[in-house]
Image 1 (cartoon, rainbow, N blue to C red):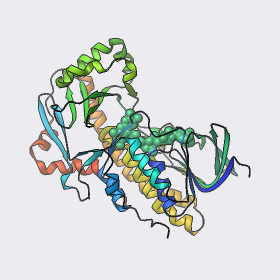
Image 2 (spheres, rainbow, N blue to C red; image 1 turned 60 degrees about the horizontal axis):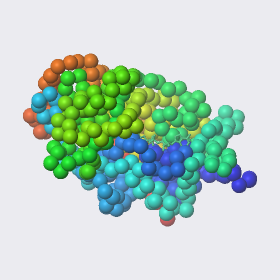
Image 3 (cartoon, rainbow, N blue to C red; image 1 turned 60 degrees about the vertical axis):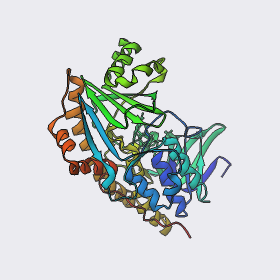
Image 4 (cartoon, rainbow, N blue to C red; image 1 turned 45 degrees about the vertical axis):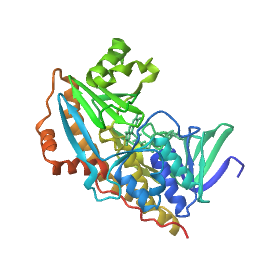
Length: 407
Ligand SMILES: Cc1cc2nc3c(=O)[nH]c(=O)nc-3n(C[C@H](O)[C@H](O)[C@H](O)COP(=O)(O)OP(=O)(O)OC[C@H]3O[C@@H](n4cnc5c(N)ncnc54)[C@H](O)[C@@H]3O)c2cc1C
């Protein structure tokens, strides 16, 4: 083997939440694992900052929760929405059967840095940044490794198992020829930051009015905001111009009027083209996809990171014992899909119902809105707010870490 060829038990494409958590868990169990990440660091554009109670529970099970919560974050115990003139409390996390009864808002790069810092303590863990997976290596139809480009040449990796955790535009799933089912989405999202003042209102999930949806996430000294637009509507927004967008934001959240000028040009605004999809089959011999690579989620509920982490925990629980006993079979990979398919489908189903019945309709509508009956019930019956809290905070069938650390 030359210097640019290495051999590991498991090679993971993508150092996002799914890849880093799986890499951490396998290395912790003593299984040699290599994570390849195409970027130079984790410090990139905003791509979701929500660490839900289910992920915090995983951190607790790993004995890392206290240290993790020492990183700067905001704790959000309830979520609400401003619908027209009415404010409605939507979710109350304070009754969840978990150690943390709140969503922690923490930049995703801090979460990934934390995981990589701890993963590096295990000799079985390797992480190569600036290494982009380009192709898979097949032997008799079985995936036996991959090819990646580094800054100074090509890397060939031989692995018993290749995991595609390379996100919703996954190269791995593409090269593996896995079929993607597109479930459609009626919206795109414009993400932007605006500074936050001490006398601003508290945490709000969203403001819905006049055919517009605007989300504000309290990030301490700034608001991470999301402006939801009809699918493919960005050209329209662009044509109407930045002053018109600033006015629309100020109309939805008047307290931001004095700082919408912080949006100086279009580079301050990031377009998320929303897609909701999933693989029909998440695996083939020698290969498994998890996280967004297996199922891109709608941003509704901000559950993408947490589903990715849950996939990683389930994959480690099922596969680590098989690695330790000898080999991982396709039957084991199928077991991972079987285990995670119900939570994925059920979450996407709910997201699609909300997309089509609520968001799609709001975006088409005009004029003042009032909260629909379901939201009015949530507003007036506190017990009911525990249901969305459970769905958002824990999701369907939350995973628990079962793989012990290697002695
Ligand atoms: C703007 C935006 C806002 C979002 N907001 C939220 C939110 O508030 N809450 C939430 O839960 N989710 C949110 N999401 C979704 C969330 O980011 C994803 O669901 C989650 O990160 C999926 O994790 P993952 O590890 O599967 O994939 P990703 O996080 O996409 O990670 C994949 C990694 O693979 C790397 N990669 C890709 N291709 C290659 C390659 N060929 N070789 C090597 N590396 C590669 C990428 O650089 C990336 O680091 C948001 C997404 C976006 C884009």
